[in-house]
Length: 239
Image 1: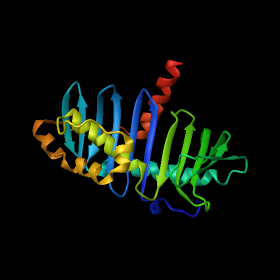
Image 2: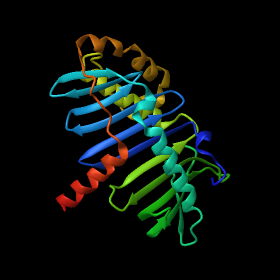
Image 3: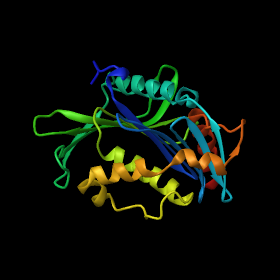
Image 4: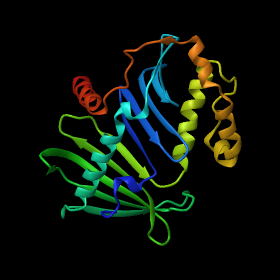
């Protein structure tokens, strides 16, 4: 893992969950960013446009993927994950997951609080999903820095369950805006018929939404670092 560069991964997803929720997906098949503000209010980036659905109204603006600034964040987290491997104080456990399709062994590396590059890491763990030969196809890091909310980031080389989650986000968005009357299917339906699920997403004319949306030049996707700090303050206030 230490020898893998960030650019060697084909995709990643980022999430943090408390009051607000952020998911950023970049796979071989999809590029989608999602920010849940509260309840049914959310922002979603897809195919060159940032949309914001709030109070049953739709706003949008043109935006390139790079403007989301998630790539630098993900690369920094990959560097942090590799630096964790240098720590000698680590607890390793391995768990067999019989229901998993092919990577049935979960190797977990848990780290105590540590100082890395001047940053105080209060909690960190790495999860490796291993096949029978000990090869992994995904690495997940759970991490909490002092002053930030907990976050999770997964790196993976191939399409898989993450594509299903992306499709569910787009499907729900399309249904909210009237692009389909079909309810979001069960994960098992998507897994059993991948071609059907892809075709359903392709059949939704997201460009048509622009005709009914209000253009908002000041619309932005939240800066993830700032959002993690804000979420940590919200969490502290709640408890």
